[in-house]
Length: 396
Image (cartoon, rainbow, N blue to C red; front, side, top):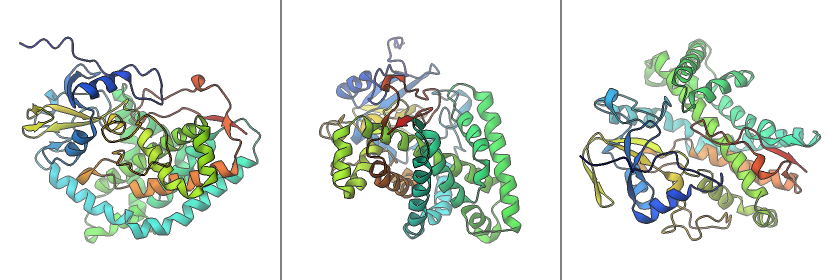
């Protein structure tokens, strides 16, 4: 029997919150595929190099389901990405159907039409921010409410309910309290079902109403509610984090802030650089091998767990020159923050519009923006899947 007591144990120590864990860098240098022990105590393959992460993102031999879910390797108690999800027999078909249903609502045409509205929202939040006396929590004033307002309007969810579903979303993302996460997901799904039932009889120009109408109205309320809950969670949680971390990157790199102020057209590449660096590899996406996969000098056996670290891949020196530098003029930036292939994030165009709209205006409106507390006093949300900050105190 192989001695696995010496396997690297996740999560790895991360002394600098804006940098990847030093051990991730060591493992990446030694091998693209490393056996590790997850926080749940199970074994998994950790993938840290860009080429292998990219290849496995698009490999149909990997999935989120498992033929024996009760005995599958787990990462954590998180109900979203900590253990197997979905039906093993139908997962590929289910995934293809879901993407076919949702992709039209995030088309290039729809997103282009949405951009002016997002830009107007940003201006409204910045106008309100300008009336306040610093210091101000930018997380509360901009980073959180903007993505929530956008996804609410897109889905057809009342913005007034934002505090309640924010609590549910935070609980759902908890890495440790499984019972609370399950209860909150049940509450969020019930809330969405109530909205869907109303949309059946009072449709509007939003995603939930649109889903009620597709396939001749044959989709069940439960299925639409689950899709809506997933979109509501993913549509604001990760973008909130990226606005906070993007702002923090600029505030800790004054040369890059000045570069953007001198050339506002760089906002597009700046956002891609924020996307690349905003995931520091503290978590990785869990997948399971549906059959044997030979890659990176190893053979992944069917049923084994695979952890795709896009955060580490985004800092692979084989792909990115000076990978730990925040360089907004970086032109070659094939980051994997939105995944790749058939699992590329449907909401990526929306996230890009929101981030571009924020960073096109925030620094020019507040050119003296700076942290109101020392960097080491910032509190990071290490106990939730999406990470990020509890608050971002700023002054100007």
